[in-house]
Length: 634
Image (cartoon, rainbow, N blue to C red; front, side, top):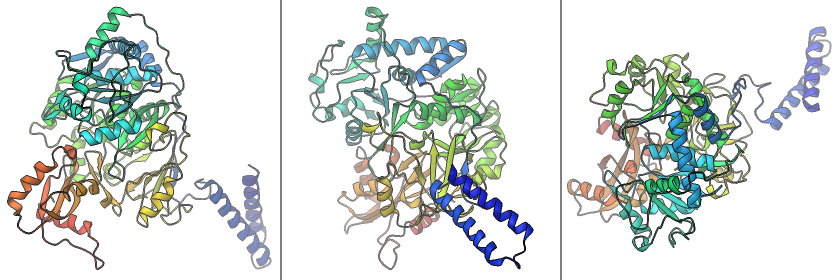
């Protein structure tokens, strides 16, 4: 631009003047020119906010643009991989005994897409998936992508109120569930959510008006994955696919061709107790899967990605499934839910090369059984040095990643060339086609120097489309900057102000250590707990505990855990007349069904008094230190 040209001319004139004339002969002219140059530079920074031209020592970085981004839809990429690598194994679901090549997977996905289209699902409809890690989840992800139907990932741990909130927030038209999983009875739960469900007739007909539920007005169809029995009010998924195969084998549907359309809604707890909907496009998550796979060094037909993490999470659907189809790799589901013993068995059995979880606590863990592993990702919380040293013995190219659901999710990731210190002390290097800057908490226009903590902002293809409300994902404007991490300061006030700009996501403090790496800081960490990559908002648990008749006061903190990164610990002050020994079990039973299982406190600390400031504010960081010491966690 002309403004930049003027700035550069002023800089050149000033540099030349300094060389030919001493400050002694023309002090005033030189001083004025210097001030003018500095003013122009400052103006340029205020206009562009994060250009690196005059700020090599500031916390701003821009990723490389040498790797071309994919501009196709997920369905188009899936079809391309199926055509080009038909004999490569696409999926292994060990617990189900399923093994499919890309040719077979492509055929199965097309059958499912035809069935869903026949049922009445159309472009832009929301399809909730409330399943564990199964073959059906895999096929539905790509079938909905080919239809332009937005897949909504729903946590199997959600209870009635959480499920109702999520379904209504994004206006789901259909829900696909498993009848039961472990101790959860989802049929019974749906019966409480939709009281007339058992009397509803759900014939396999595209002309049927569908379900009418006052609690979830948008919900018309409920499908289940148990092909061995009929469930009143629900449609058998297996019967649906078989019926369409028999009666309408040549039904046609039109695939979307706009990669910037929303195709996936994922829920994130963020900084409030209610789930928030992150609306993500084909371009968002397909390219993130590609670039994550690039950092891991995946190659077609060679790498086998073990996926023990839940598919409702961005880890599963993006960093496993999408990374696999872009790189023509195999994705392996060891079990429907996480089982560390089975993970070790399947790594050895399937000769997996990439792993996405900490399995060091497995009783069957042994380095000699993990020799096939080469790479993978560890994320969700900082990795201790001793853990990293053990991991690198069997996975030397393991990477560390940082991101959020709202950014597709990964924005920083280490490479195989990084040393152990970089993998332990940082969260990696900026991803390609991504910009990041760390700004002053009180002055968001000011980019802080390298090494100084502040608020981390990320910009690029990866930022979710639209605001946190999933209903605005179609046709919504792409966000420019996404706030990933926030430092100390007037958090709540600034959080509200940022929300008006279209999207503010608080995570944790950040600071940069070099030109392209970032590290965690802990000043804001007490706002939530990160357990196994899941954000848990302590206040949500505290509000439920306060309703128990024995609880006088409560505070929830996170404590270290080698398996999940952190666990939930509850400090409880009881009312007079209640005994801690007997009350703890009562509280545990009280919480069942009210909060998801991963939010349940693992530890209880009963105290009459809590550490507080002179103004009476609870000091959670002190409580955390005491809990760690008393529980002997370090």
